[in-house]
Amino acid sequence: QLQLVESGGGLVQPGGSLRLTCVASGFTLEYYAIGWFRQAPGKEREGVSCISRSGMTTKYTDSVKGRFTISRDNAKNTVYLQMDSLKPEDTAVYYCAADYTPYPTICTLINEGSYDYWGQGTQVTVSS
Image (cartoon, rainbow, N blue to C red; front, side, top):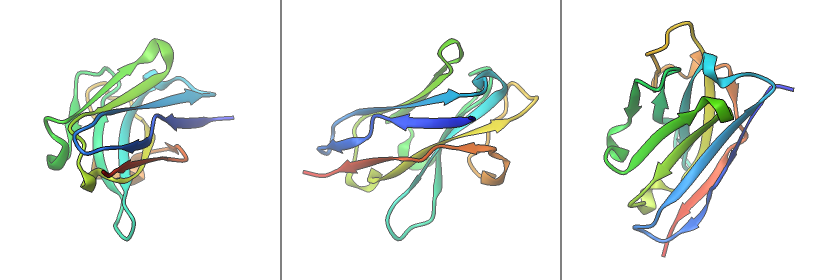
């Protein structure tokens, strides 16, 4: 069965940190660009960060630049999202998604339709 599984979410105080993990099973992540998306209650899903197949290209939405870091370990079939200096507005369900692409240096935060597989999501709550 082809699936992505996220973990690492939870409740954290403002200013705290979390590391989200996305593990693929049933397929090899090295052929996929990976994106992290989030959806807060009452809001549309938005792209947070993405990383190309090679890891050479990373992108971040403006609101998380300088606070979040995406990385990948293809040998472990895993992608990470390190989230530091968390703010209450970061509260959302976070999803990872995999985009099969022949291009090693491309990823997209905008075109959700290009992503082939999605995880079930992990809740991140930032509150005092």
